[in-house]
Length: 377
Image (cartoon, rainbow, N blue to C red):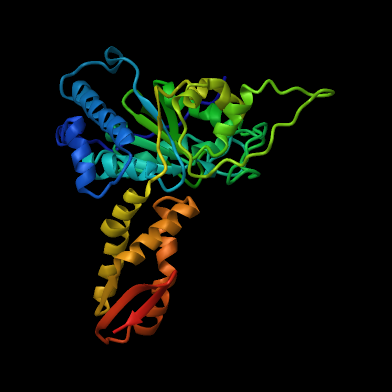
């Protein structure tokens, strides 16, 4: 018989009081809060996430305040967010669940995890992190949300798709972590270690999973090409005609025809039963120029203006410079992440010359031809 798993008592907490303090916002109110806090674009994804947020809180209240058993409420919801880099997938999860609802929320980079026995953490330690975020209150941790980032990097080695991160040695086949996630996404409970240093030898607790929500996020670059190949009727040997190579763009939106093809995910390198654990697959669109312009003004420039103001400098960016920065960012296909990368090189010289000098002044970015020029006044 296997050895008995050691355990210890979790820190007690009044979970009913904590659940009662969670704001029960309608889906429309959740969406309005997201916009008020600076989230831009993705109306379709915002709607889906807002409905999930309401249902998550409503489920917690019915279990912990109304006394209904979790089994009577049906299975929990797990969502899969798919979209190009920099389109706001993880930001949406963190802003909505961590900042607005303030339930225990973690974002894990799944590439750091491996099948038990290999280098890296196994998937049970995801629950360990959630337990720590909930200040070691087991019942409160079981009310939380787990965001699994870089989910597409779990595609097994048999996948023919090319994507960033391919070739890592976190696992032998890529299926080990996928199998480990099956229990977390649909099981009733799962043991997890409370000692990060000796995960397999230390004491363990068992976390109920009935009220946890898992949201996986990934770019899935190459998935559209993989789906397209399924319908080509490709042959081998004599008479084979090679399809012309057409590299897939980075910033591409996947349609429902692709998202509904379990075979496409399987060929990409995922266990069909793992994809089946997600009740909703939400496609994020590449950010358009208008949305990028709004993010640039409301978030990126605001942060840099505050930093320059702390140094006694007034940062001014001409309107045509903003348009140029957005145009360059669209070409880079990196979404909101590309905005900072496009802007920073033009601010470095001014920062190098004036930061720490205690001299007040004005830094202006203007456009001369197609070149952005930095002036100091």
